[in-house]
Image 1 (cartoon, rainbow over the protein chains, first blue to last red):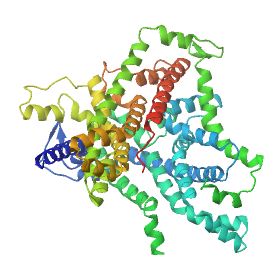
Image 2 (cartoon, each protein chain N blue to C red):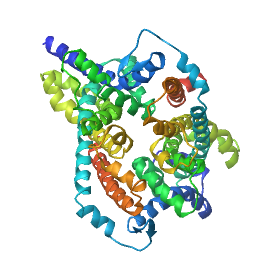
Image 3 (cartoon, chains in turn brown, red):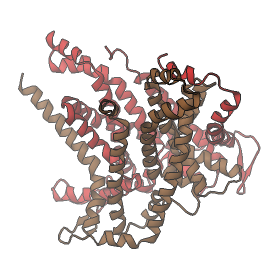
Image 4 (tube, rainbow over the protein chains, first blue to last red):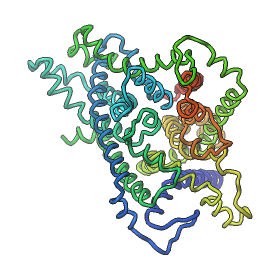
Length: 266
Length: 290
């Protein structure tokens, strides 16, 4: 009776370990190779180096792509947060045709990126819009809009109506209530949604490949370089980006999760 | 109805102008492109120029040409296998997580989600360097004496795509299964135990059936993400690993036949919609809430 559950627990733990190893092996490769020379599947453990990180500072092509990615990400976030919040308010305010609208907003997120990307590619061609960073920003915004919208709407729906009623009782106008009561209550959801949107935009590859012009983002630049193989400084960049994204998502979790903790404290 | 509370005082009436503004962005940048895309699938190409005259030729070609349907089915089977393997690995993992207590449970869950944050392109590249003939996997297998010399079994073919997609997508299978398992009320398990069921019986007759909606969602997620991917097959598929996504992508590059590519996309969209609907239909959690 005691032995059987123990055995099953050991088996479950073994599978979990296997999954963790499988999931982390692709992360391990670039991080290790950013510190040690690697050739033909063998790591040279004898000569650790940080020269890859120094070389990165001199790789202008990659740094330019990184800068482009950040600019695209910021533009996407601003557009997605503003329109996502407005759409959430519209849905929550029982606007006409809200279910249909919600369905349209979710479409690019549900459809495979290749379909959204190709549809935009043809669309841009038909309206005569040259492929550029603008088209990339549009592509990213359409893709991440659903995330921001959903995050803000969830917060709106969990907001207590007494807050708004109290505001009206105290004589506030519609606009005062919006700016002083509703918006401050939404702010942490908006920030959390913005961080998630930025993380998605930062790594978006499939839509970007299809709608990008000559100037392009980091993932697409990396994709183009992959055929030739990477120089070691790319591994350094990847290690840094991974650290950065983990921090970013820890931040997002902080804004989205500890609501009760925050309200209890204040 | 609870959610109606806030709305009524704030937004008394939406004017048609506001409605038009709300619809403007989604309609122009989502609905219009998809509609134009659909229409494109009925056009054709003549000497590098798109002919704007309706025809069913693209669909006829898809169904009659000996190339496309077999690749289509093979890709569907490939992605079903990816979903199946992901679930076989993700289910025990998710189950193990739910046996852990409090903080450990979520810490480990987070740990298994972190790889999602890593650049997709870099992960594909890293897996490629693991799988290759001189890759880490072959080195390890030879080093451990499991095989005598490097195997070509998983070197840039369909198997490589299968392995790579599974590695990339397992986290998407763990999460829904974990959420479904976590929702199962502990009372049910204790009642089953009190009534004399063995732990295996409890698992087979209570836990497993109640977690199936999570499995359905997981399968639908992984399948949809796998079938839409054209980067992975391009990178690790070599010459023999030809998938539908790759063919579709090539219509917009080397082959330059946008209308035909649009028709292929419509076929892909049908499969994706079917998978999402199936995931919705079987992913509903019935009876697990108490």
